[in-house]
Amino acid sequence: MKILIIAEHKNGLLSEATQELFGLPLGQAEVHAVVAGESVEPLAGPLGQLGAAKVHLIESPALASGTGESLGQALGQFIPQLAPDVVLAAHSAQGKDLAPRLAAALDAALATDCIQVSCDGDQVTARRPVYAGKATAEVEFTDDGLKVISVRPRTVKPPESDAARSASDASVAVEFPAQKTALKKIIAGGNERPDVTEASIIVTGGRSLGSAENFSVIENFADSIGAAVGSSRAAVDAGYRPYRDQVGQTGKVVSPQVYIACGVSGAIQHLAGMRTSKHIVAINTDPDAPIFQLADYGIVGDLFEVVPLLAEAAKNRSGS
Ligand SMILES: Cc1cc2nc3c(=O)[nH]c(=O)nc-3n(C[C@H](O)[C@H](O)[C@H](O)COP(=O)(O)OP(=O)(O)OC[C@H]3O[C@@H](n4cnc5c(N)ncnc54)[C@H](O)[C@@H]3O)c2cc1C
Image (cartoon, rainbow, N blue to C red; front, side, top):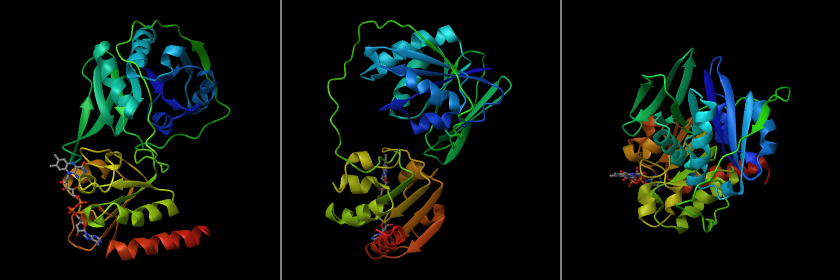
């Protein structure tokens, strides 16, 4: 079986979610990686150390903008040349755009937002959450054609890089027909904390914070442990936090190592965005709040008393 991993990168580094794809149980598959961008040759080494046998480099100024359209055009030409059985992408912002685009263009089977993928001989199976995470569907592919699979970030541990491993690399030439979209400008969000989709720890606040100013309690704690700040939809709707922080069915789906929910009731739509977190901590005044049913650790108490104590303890521990 031949597997192609689409490598995402930013500022000359592979994304964490791309590295995780190499940690999937891919059996004896022949693993290729493709990396597209302006000057991406230096990424061939790290991809080889992660386990790629061959790295395909698509270099063009047309890829500098990183739009889904140009990347889709490039990969849409390259993938039929390589003829892999499976294409794997991270279910990141880029992967969410790219995977359906490629599946449609290449008439491939598609499974998105998977939390498990395994290859056994020629058989590929994937598992993906459905019904807001209440159930998991097992997807089996019923024909031999190309399969495009996107994998939710932070569901698999990336393998250790092995300096003894290396990949051969080859340049791929593609053409770029006239584009229908152009990236004009990136307006930075002005957020110095990690994004909720990338952070390994998230501290989330809910409606109970009562105001945007009161979120400083959550921010102080998050900063003391290097965490991202998340929000329930109720807090976003009330104007306490920007939408980019919203976790849940209509917000972002996250799978951090630690998720700390402060004054969040645990509505099903919120749980849909964070139930795959590795460890869940809940702080709530109501001992019957639904969030406690999912939490690994629970503190029944007022977040305005508990959270500052946790922040202080974290600062004392780190000596700052
Ligand atoms: C179609 C649809 C999509 C939705 N999508 C999302 C989504 O993506 N994300 C999302 O979050 N929600 C979503 N919702 C909304 C969801 O149903 C809930 O209304 C929302 O999650 C509630 O937010 P909350 O927990 O902050 O507020 P509440 O439900 O009001 O809960 C506040 C909690 O804080 C506790 N509390 C109060 N004071 C304190 C205190 N001082 N200290 C500690 N605890 C305290 C209370 O006991 C309570 O449990 C969606 C709803 C619909 C219908």
